[in-house]
Image 1 (tube, rainbow, N blue to C red):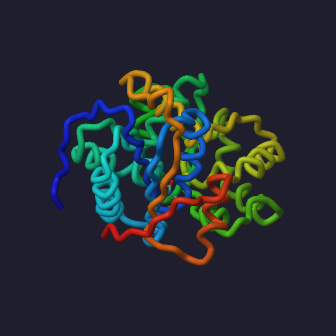
Image 2 (image 1 turned 30 degrees about the vertical axis):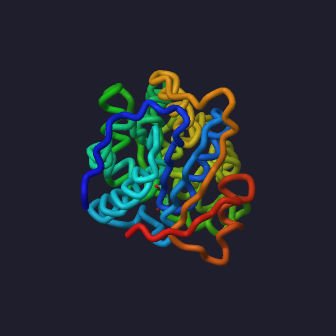
Image 3 (image 1 turned 90 degrees about the vertical axis):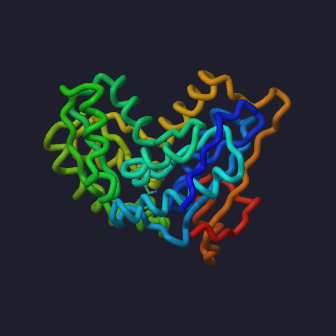
Length: 278
Ligand code: DGL
């Protein structure tokens, strides 16, 4: 695959590219749009190959390079990797493909943890994210005194995809996953997956029922704050006259597409194009 090397582009009118393994990254788009309504966003969801979280690092990196190449060919001012699994295993490879800023969701979450003053932190994510130890290593770099308790929570992605966002079964699964870290008295729980912001309510309820008062940090909101800071730092903000917008590229168009997409985005997607990126 050819390397895409371009000079950092000073054109503030260019869009921000965002990609994810599927539609879950629309939680990140939602958060970015709330902070930066004038920005134009190009979103790519590789929903033909979702999930990434159960695959090997080498396969995730290959898929991530396909996604990045497609978006970088559209001309962007910034690339946002909304997928935790990709951010965990493929960020250096993506950064080597371009000179524009590339932001990963894990770095954003770690920054939020580091300013939380917590010294016992729980992290949940896909098997790929947790087994990579990316959060563990990055937290140790910023503060080696923070104790990290990690748990892969693979059943939560299919629960969200199926719309099981509350109820006894969902709460029982969450409780089973969180009990060990609650026993370790975590003070912060970081939701290290695109899908988990939709489970905020049952997660808070379960923590409460288990007698734990941990603050819950979701990586989508952290990512939006990082994007806003980078835009300010590099003076990349869209012109005052810009109205913003969202164009969405997807690699498959299943029957359930609109229902699942609007669950993550909070509104119906209108500008959708199906593409082949492999
Ligand atoms: N987007 C993935 C993540 O944030 C979750 C879905 C998947 O496994 O691909 O890790």
